[in-house]
Image (cartoon, rainbow, N blue to C red; front, side, top):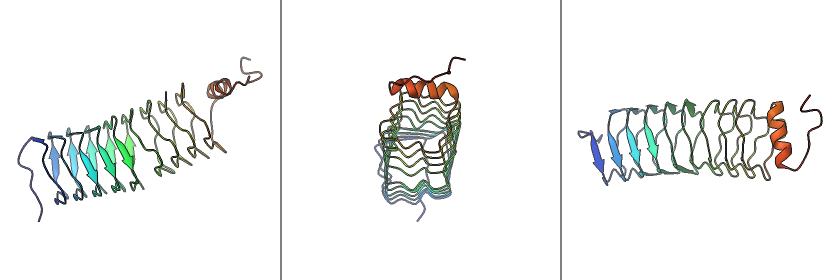
Length: 206
């Protein structure tokens, strides 16, 4: 049975295995709510905030989110397949063993989020704010990261082969053990990368 939301503020509510599919959720605040096993497939959220909420085994595939926030949320074994996020904040949220196939981000802020070990191969992450994001061991091969702000990002052991990093901010990013085979970078990035590895790029100042 589909559960209909009738309030604008929920604190500590139990939405475990609740069916919220295909609903339009606008201007609602959820704080420390449990959405484990919940079905939100096809939902449309706008100006909605989820703070420290838990989504274990939840279904968020084919959802659309506009100017919504997921702050300090936990997503584990959650399906985000073909979800679309526009102007959203995922500040400090953690993604573990999630299905992210076809997910699309536009003008989103992923600062301090963790996608460690997640598969985002081929995703368009261009222009996103991703400061201090945790991408340790993530599969990012073929990703479009042009113009993304990756300052302070942790990319240890990440697979960035074939990724396009031109124009991305990579100051203080950690690249230890990262795979960059076939990745595209610009001259300024090459200088930064070389310097971080104790190398001097000949002719870079010409």
